[in-house]
Amino acid sequence: MSLLSFLPHRISQRLTALYFTASSFSLQRRPQTTQTNTMAGMTVTKIPALKDNFMYLIKCNKTQEAAVVDPVAPDRVLEVVQQENCKLNKLLTTHHHWDHAGGNEALYERYRQNPAWGELSVYGGEDERIAKLTNPVKQDDTFEIGNLRVRCLSTPCHTTSHICYFVESDTERAVFTGDTLFLAGCGRFFEGTPIQMYEALIEKLSSLPDDTQVYCGHEYALQNLRFGQTIEPNNEDIRAMLSKADTPDVEQRRALVPSTIGQEKRINVFMRVKQPHMEEKFGTSDPVEIMKLLRAAKDKF
Image 1: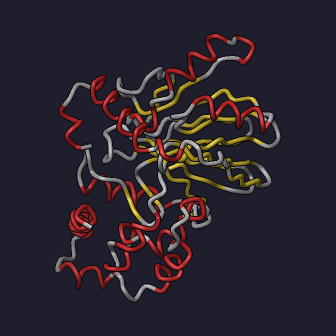
Image 2: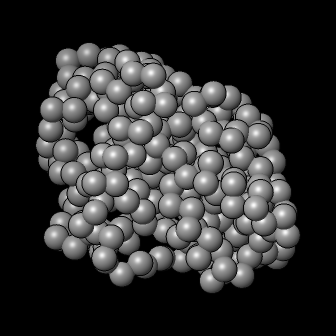
Image 3: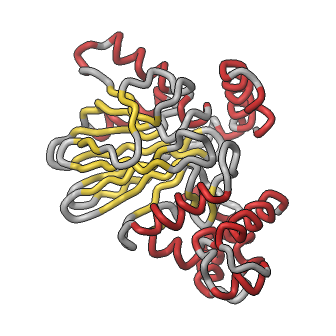
């Protein structure tokens, strides 16, 4: 995928679309399941897409207003919106890659063809590669989904304009992390540097309340946990989570999402670069250098 960064964006998006469509073809006949987490103030519905992507429908329980995160499969999103009986009026894009933003144009066009649905606002980092972007956002920009409060976190590295969305009600918190933070892992440094990922994971995401639920962009838990165990073989939290993830059934592994910020601090080696034993293992006291070395090791894992 890093080679695609050298191609014109339109060509790279088409090639990426072909790749993901082909790689997910064998899954197209699987039952289309969702997993819904109903809380006091918000409901989050996790919608699997392609081979291992997640889309998310975020609903304010009081107003029934909703937003969707990275709707790469617009028709499936609209089915779930109808099932949830909510009013979808916001699209939250984490980054420009096709498997996240590739459905923006089609969903926007569906709203244009159906004026009774209202206007669809498309949020994302300021980036011409994000289709139909109507509301460019940056660090600490805020908006609402009904009564839910949303704060934007700029997390460049995987892409230059990557945004995570921190959503709060009066009683619960969630963050939608795209390809920056995965369960027990992080995204590749396609367009950024180790210090940017350090700032994203350690200075921004780690500072969120420990009970913040983490909804990531892909199901990579098993591979991430196996890698983490090679780095921290005595980490009991990694071992316990790995025992839950170690199953051939991908749908069961998807039940591991969401994790929480507190859990990630215990199981995610990329969020543990300041731990004393990391200095011993990598021979440096610089956590940014450790981040760099960890990513290089994971890329070869």
